[in-house]
Length: 82
Image (cartoon, rainbow, N blue to C red):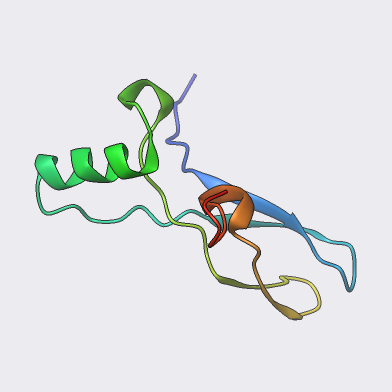
């Protein structure tokens, strides 16, 4: 059986039309292994858990075109240190 590469992504539902949408996560291009390790440390991510990714701050529904800002506080916390 052929193999394919999986990419990290975020799933969200459109509040206007109800369509399920997927947005590919942004994987930052690190200049060095040390930079990647610093990012892992800041985000408290071990190498066994995966790698640092960035969520999109704006998305657009593939069906109806409605645009939304994303609530990334559940991923990154809020300004109050959550």
